[in-house]
Image (tube, rainbow, N blue to C red; front, side, top):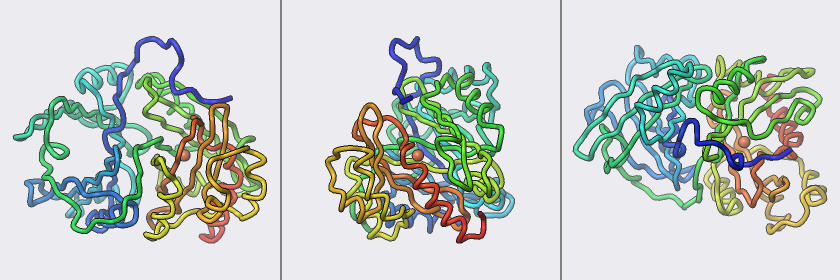
Length: 373
Ligand code: FE2
């Protein structure tokens, strides 16, 4: 059982998407979060919108690294939907935006197939050109914007002014969004799998059940949905039964509903990336040292030295097509909700199933420290 990027000889893409356009977070203090993403995670400031640029009531900081664009947005008053979202969920992902060639047509197709509208196609214009944007609902309060850029020449979107980081930090080398994982309620996974299949034309890549990824205490079920060109991958998790509360239930309790669990960011040099991130204060889950006693028996020969992986806590897994290196941060806000994965693929197209047991045991040690196991 392994993943393919796209079925061979598949019919014309049922919902053409070029890739991830941006990921927007709604947060309590975008100014400070922007500094975390710059100085800890190695992003650079690209653009800004706020009262100074004619946007009332909110500020947004756009950060860039490789092809990854993140937006951090905060409300300037209590009555804004952003403030309500932050009060309920804490800091979290509001929007996984997709880059399309024709927003009106993508939106009409999605609506005809049963999507729920958040924003009708809207033309945004400034002196640098025009962008057409619409949005549809996905799990919880999360949305997918559909962004058509055509010839837009500005820094980001109309309404945003170009900005750059005031202090430069060392390059981390994160390159693109590899996958975005959603946590949904018990029994809801197949509904969201059907949404991505029927509404957005995604297909299922790989599945594993709770026997594959359970520990003594907690378990989950997961299915991975990918778009036609394979550039967008959305694993969907739901909790499965265990003796105690699963990590997915802990997330759902603290996020107060379904939402994005982690974003996996790719790199071409995970050893450099993790060494730099650690030096800049990013905290990672730690697997037991015994993991490295047997890992090479499981994955065979790799290019990296075992010592460098052990020193940095990087995990390895292999599938039929190659191997991958990965590591997971601790949650990046006080609630045990969103975290990041750093991943380097060396042929493997899967998601590190062989590491799940060691990883879940590490997560459960953290859950126990929080009193949530
Ligand atoms: Fe992942």
